[in-house]
Length: 400
Image (cartoon, rainbow, N blue to C red; front, side):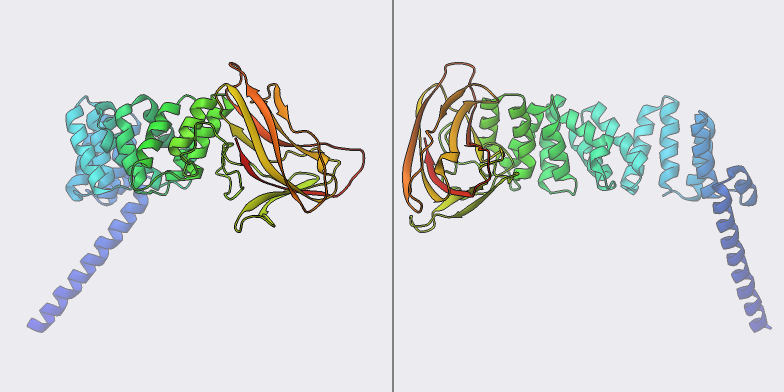
């Protein structure tokens, strides 16, 4: 008899659990459609109470939302959505301190609840708690595939400029290399009006264990160049770019074409265009390991060829280099120095040619005027003719 009673009790217990599970599943399904019906099916259902609380809050009934949120939490104290709705309903009733306590509890329970983290981000910014604000922003940006379009990126971008206290915590978080770092720094550096904020954040990173890459510093440099702030752009390039060297202010860089461009005009810009190709190549018959720029030109097109932006103070200068004709007419490729962005020409090398296969040293003198020429372009200029031809030259050992 006892055995039969035990089996009957176990059967009833299993049946009760099955019915409870069925009721819970049904109520959760119905809760998404009709919270009121779900509550009738299963009084005290956390899912139904939570959904009902959300709907009451959306209907601007914070009192009703408060009541249903408490019901949900009585059933499930770790219900993050219930906590969030409770916090928002408290805020709507003017109970800000209690609201913050509840929202922070919800935020600790789940970093994945975007609404809660967004509320805490705003709350921390208003309270001047920069470290917590950056922590919340990091949580939100990690959850989106397109951080560029996230409003959180815009908030951090503006904050870096207008909230100086945000820069340190932001740089510390970026130093940990979160997945949104590079895209954010590109956005920060290319946004007009936030140059000082971008400069300070990049400087903090530069001094730390995770310095910015060329891709991350180039947008700020290029934006300043585009605004004709050549002196500031070059100063920032020297301070921030991993490609910068301790050469004199505005001096020509990489005269032997050893290094790739860092994406700014302060390194050599080499791009193939219609009618021409440009490559770095070993310099024949010179010191072992010396590199040169090889340019092949069809003598007919007018492509943009090698160039570098200089920032020289006023006064006389002499540019020198070595060149070698490999094939064709050496008079078709000449170097020009002009004021940036498109100002007067300061000097152009004389068109000369000579026997192929021999290096020769060239020079050109010019004077940087006292005003109106803070930046200067050093650029290779093609001289086009009326027919196609094959012309190849090598250039190296540039200096000022």
